[in-house]
Amino acid sequence: MPDLAFLTAAPFAHRGLYGGGVVENTRAAFEAAIDAGHGIETDVQVSKDGVAFAFHDYELDRLTEKSGLVIERKAKKLEKIRFKGAGETIPRLTDALDIIAGRVPLLIEVKAKNRKVKKLCCSVADALADYSGDAAVMSFNPEVGHWFAKNAPHVVRGLVVTEEDEESFVDRLKAPMQRSLSVFRARPHFLAYDIRSLPSAFAEPLRAEGMAVLTWTVRSDANRATAAEHADQIIYEAP
Image 1 (cartoon, rainbow, N blue to C red):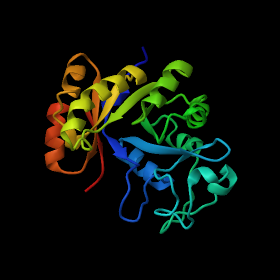
Image 2 (image 1 turned 90 degrees about the vertical axis):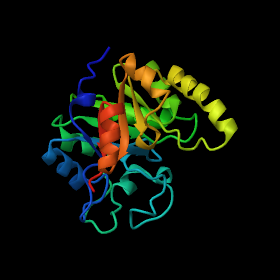
Image 3 (image 1 turned 45 degrees about the horizontal axis):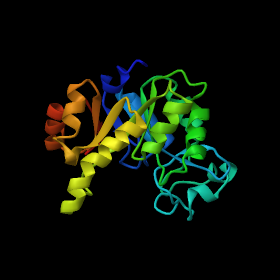
Image 4 (image 1 turned 135 degrees about the vertical axis):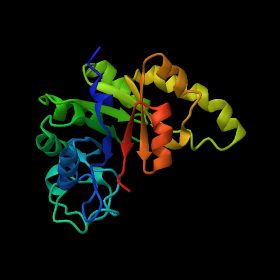
């Protein structure tokens, strides 16, 4: 079992500490979180040629001067694309790791839509291969945790969970079983739970058994109060 103490040691800045002209998941956002002494949560997409980039969206349109899917461009093209309103380009995951350099812990949310996760997971595992700092991967997709449990079991892994899409009566009946199956498949060391879904009848027993529960995205005093009672650490955005 890997050492999991870093998961709860300090708050995590969601996509780095951004705002006030600093764009999410940029070098400046990572440095700001480090300066605050907080951990960093970042997202990962993969290039056409299998390189991990610190970027949240599947498409480039919202944040950059280009458009289209991230996965349709090769790494050498992606790393030259500039963010809107910032003098920065999209960082590779290895760039982020070089900046962080073990100074604060890192959560890497692996953005995977379907069961075909090998290319993306390999890109993250390759980036982490020579990294000695505290880092963990997490995803909504249980196939990501399954891949890491099988192929890189030394990497700390988490399952991201929300109950907010469970609108119908049928959804609410099926959801607990689906969550249990996801935990069984992903074999997570921790949960990253939607703050809107806490307290949770699903999360509480797992937490009582010793599984760390982080919660996202904490933005208010009310959120912080909920997190203090029902989670072990927060993933937050500055107000």
